[in-house]
Amino acid sequence: MLSADEKQLILHAWEKVHTHQEDFGAEALERMFTVYPQTKTYFHHFDLHHGSEQIRRHGKKVVVALENAVHHMDNLSAALCKLSDLHAYNLRVDPVNFKLLSHCFHVVLAGHLGEEYSPQVHVAYDKFLAAVSDVLAEKYR
Image (cartoon, rainbow, N blue to C red; front, side, top):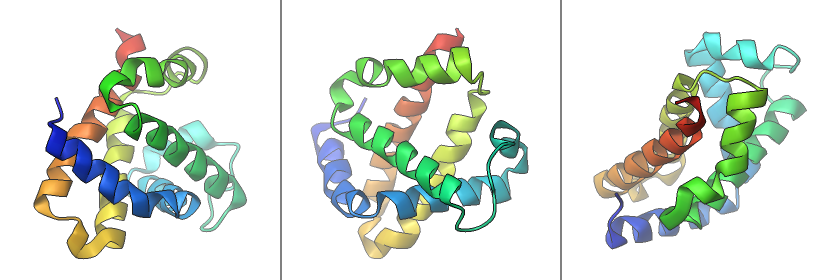
C-alpha cells in the first residue's frame, strides 16, 4: 500500500513523464525487447527496430495507461480493469512480462530523472509498479 507521501512523490515525478510519454514508453519497450528478448513474441507483427513508429505508438499507450493508474492510485483495479481483460483474455500475455516492463520503466525513469529519482522515489515507484503489475495479473487467477 502506498503512503500519502509516496503518492505525492509519484505524482511529482510523473509531471516530467507526462511531457515525454511517447519517448519514455518507447525507450522502456525497446529496453525490454533487448534485455528480455522472449517478450518479442507478443509483438511479432511489429517493426521492432529502434525508433519504429509501432514501438513509439505502443510505448505511448503503455505510458497513457500508467498515467491513468497514477491518477487512480486508490482504485487501480477499476482503473485497469479493461486493460487487464485485454491482456488476459485476448492477448494472453504471460503476466511475468508486466514485471519485466516495470523493471525497464524504472531504468528509464532513473535515466531521465537523474538525481530526482531518489531512493524514496524509487521505492514509491517500485510499490506502484508492483501494484499495477498485480492488478494486470488479477484475471489470470
